[in-house]
Length: 330
Image 1 (cartoon, one colour):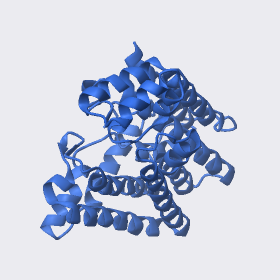
Image 2: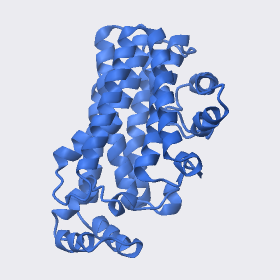
Image 3: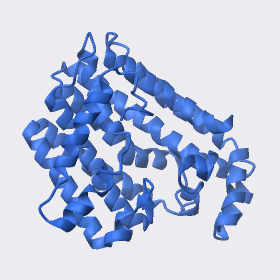
């Protein structure tokens, strides 16, 4: 389970994530056959369980020796993962997706109505678990769902907007990506019974890591091949989602040519031309620098924490991010 996970240096991670997996599959079960099939569709498709991993690693910053996560920490990770999975069902409808995680997209199999309701069911299951973990966890997850929605709407508002700013881009990814990773770390700290200053530091780590994570993901969309990504390269620019490297490229010496291609309406062929222009622009080194800045900020938030299995794993995860973005550059 932990293979490929950026937190894999945490010795207990694999066993803890197995516990997450069992609890997650229990949480998505339903007596209604159609809902049971739909709700387990993505949960059983696998995944690195990055967000539960961050909850577990955050709690482990209080450990002097590697030890299994407390039950509440595992369940907090499950609650966060259910929010993430629920959002994927809603994303499928918005994106009109046909595949996800190498399986048929939920909306392609069950239609939009069942897919939306399934996403709602998973969010409800997350709320039930959160309520059992206490009012602070419950309120935090509710706030995070609101931030996810805010970020997604900000992104939708900027669809096809060639004047999109770096500030509006950062506000969108703060909501749609960073908020959930910050939530995962904070829940790990709360459920692990950590001191308040440590919980706040872990929350800051999660936010900064989430910002770097999304920037790296957006860089890979324009740098990596479709084979490397497991999905079509350049899909964001084709859908009018202009991310940081594209925003920077539009303001470079290649900007006029890139703008003309986009305004003419991108096809798969002209998308490839647009990607070449983005790769030639300052958007790539500037995007890498932004990712490094956020990753460094994430690590800096852990400065006052003593060395521990959890803090070592979180540092390693931040270091891994920028190298992941550099990989397609050779």
